[in-house]
Image 1 (cartoon, one colour):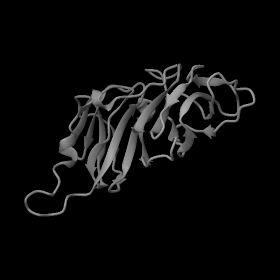
Image 2: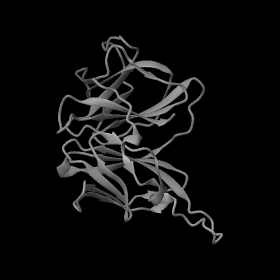
Image 3: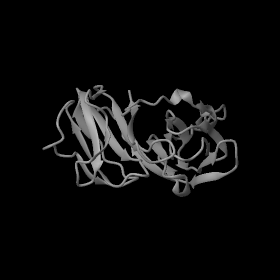
Image 4: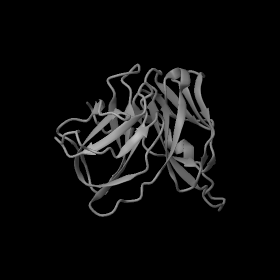
Length: 235
C-alpha cells in the first residue's frame, strides 16, 4: 500500500494575503505576530474544497487527500472555514486560537456527514543527531480503534510489540524519536494482529533530521483499502 509524501506546491495558495498584510508598513508599527498553518483534506467522500482564513481565500479546489504547505497566518483567534469548492456551502466552521511562532496542522477529517477538524500543534524542532521524529494520526473514518507496529523491513509481526495501542479515530500520538533508516509500519485492529494497513516488506525510508506526520486514511469514497500517507513537516 502507498506511503507517499504529499507536496503542498500542488495547491493554489493565496499565501501573501493571509499574513503579509501585516502592520510593519511605513507607519513604524511592529509586525503582527504570526503562526503557520498546514491544511489537510482527509474527508474521503467530500468534494474538493476551498479554505478561508477569516475572509481571505487561502486554498482553492483542494482534492482528497492533499496537504498544503505551511501558510503564514496572523496569530490570535482565526476563523477557519472549509467550503465545497466554488460554493458558499460550509462544511467546517471553526475558530481556533493560534499562538505566535507556532506551527499547526488542521485536518478536515471524517465522512462528510460528520466532518470536523483535527487541530494539532506541531513540534518542528530538530530531532537529536541521527534520528527522526514521527507522529501518527488515526484519520481513517471507516476504521475502528487500531494498534500500530513499527518494525524492521521483512520482520514478522508475530511476537512484535505495538508502539501505539487502541488508538481511536481522530487521535494523534506524541512524537516518537527513532533512528533514521527504513521501517515497516503495520496498523492492526486494536487488540489483534489483523492487519488493516501494511506499508510493505521493503520498508519506508526516513531521513535523519526530519520530522514526519503519518496519517492513516480511507480509500477515496470511504472504507478499505486503507493506506498511510507520510507528510514531511521539517526537511
